[in-house]
Amino acid sequence: MSAMPVVVSRTGMVTGVGLDAPASCAAIRGAIDNFQQTAFRDRRGEWIMGCEVPLEYPWRGEKKLLMMAARAIEQCLDGFDEAACAATPLLLCLAETGRPGRIVQDDVRFFEALQDELGFSFHAHSAVIAQGHVSAAVALNRARQLIGASAAAQVLVAASDSLLAAGALADCEARDRLLTSENSDGFIPGEGAAALLVEPLRTQPWGQLACRGIGFAIEEAHIDSGEPLRADGLTAAIKQSLQDAGCNESVLAFKIIDASGGQYAFKEATLAFGRIDRTRRTEFDVWHPADCIGEVGAPIGLAMAAVLKVACEKAYAKGSSVLLHLGNDDGKRAAMVFSWYAAGG
Image 1 (cartoon, rainbow, N blue to C red):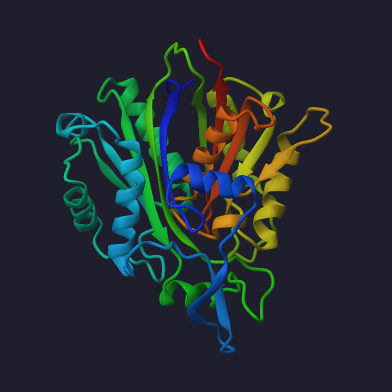
Image 2 (image 1 turned 30 degrees about the horizontal axis):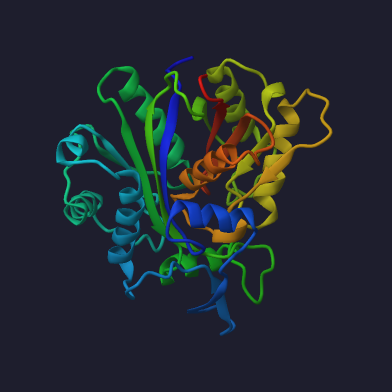
């Protein structure tokens, strides 16, 4: 392996179906959504459906992203004091720089405002990772590098994003990505935040969810390219994650993907796994939490890991080793192999 396995020890979530991780994961398990008419209309003047986070005040824009991020992070910081936070790097995942309708205008200012809201300053190795969906994998890879180099005993990874913004919706509608009265092959926009506290893998008297392998690649035939899809990028990312984990595809029991609507993502996921799978199977589940929370942008990867952790803890996961994969519209692809280590393992 290129780096040591790291464990997801705590989770936090703020979504349209729950304001904390237990509530969000319970709703996702029960296939409950909160899709409602938004204040936005499509080109025909019909209301756009969305999944809004119902906070106690009607915050909008950067303020709402800030409050969602703070709430998700606080769920991971229970019992932390100022010194513990100062020793913990925060890797903050945000939307891709230059994405149309991106709400955060200044990443550094947003990070500083988040620290002010929390009342803590984080470690000097903290950073903003503005890479959309794949931010989660980039951040977890950076976290295990920091932990492996003994630069930090634990790392906090968090994300906050929203597609419920006029600029983002207009761009997605123009590219036929949005579910509207004229387009049935699109996603329902959402918003939210998620956080994971990451630590080294150690022998513990309780079960642990470990990220064992991470892989990255570029898909040349991305959704806006006009090229025929072969899923070369995602296939390469999955192969790299398995190699990094030191295993083959036979150990995988199911997968969790970031597909939020539209045929492209599901076709790509099927093609990619079909090209690497050599195991005779009677079933292979595919989970996609965006069915309940909508297209939330950067937090989706962390939300997928949080959903998996609860599924393993409550013993409704379909197996102990799981593939997670993520993709951006610009072609960036990432895959992660997670395994559940039983108590004492």
